[in-house]
Image (cartoon, rainbow, N blue to C red; front, side, top):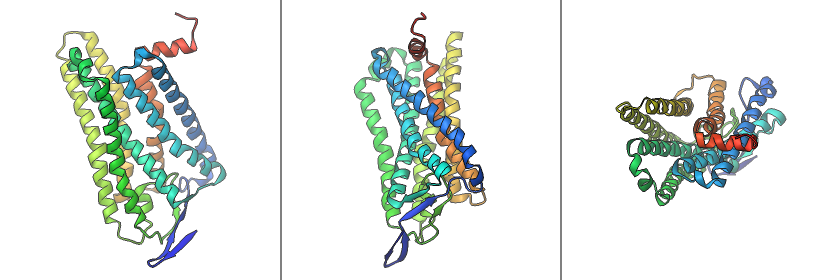
Length: 313
């Protein structure tokens, strides 16, 4: 359970508690977790299959949507099965290596999703403001470069945290009141000075997710401004529908940013509120993304209808 070194005792195994204060309700809480995971897994898998198998959907918007669906599956799979194991079997024991690996994948995927949503907003901006140049601007080579750039951004910003955590000596309590591992949630159990971890973590959230949300908001404001200067009422309706639907997803980044900041500055926030908010931010977007970005899109609607109602025209 522990190892000895020149700085004292350092825990190498931790125990994820689940939702603190609600342990007696874990069985009931597991139901929405399980249902949400199944819906997210099926919905996003269906979306990926439809986009990859239909050449007519091999356009920038749908390719970005396919990547977003894949990220949703990764994000859900990294967190929900672990939470269900805690709720059902009290299997919260996790090694330091696994804990760091889990937090790395979760944080990387979350920042990657944020970047993809920003790219999708840029895609809608080009399609609305420069429709005649859309195909010449967003060529497949550029799409690949954008995808790689977004991935490298998430990977390179989170990777240094591995070393920031590895340098710490975890000599305090090894009971983590959460369903999954987080950077500061783990670092606060160290006996070392963790100010570097705190400030670097704050830099990451401000320079990636917060910046992305602001740029997404600006892009949709520009889109609406451009659309309302067009004479077509049908165009107005489509723009409002698109921006409104996408805005629903962006709203969930508010609680996500809040729950990250409370790790550092919100010691007065009840632990179960923090954990529940963190899980809502993990569970809800993977369910909504296929609906908001996929099912409400006419071309994907037609493909879904063809799969489930093949005999209907």
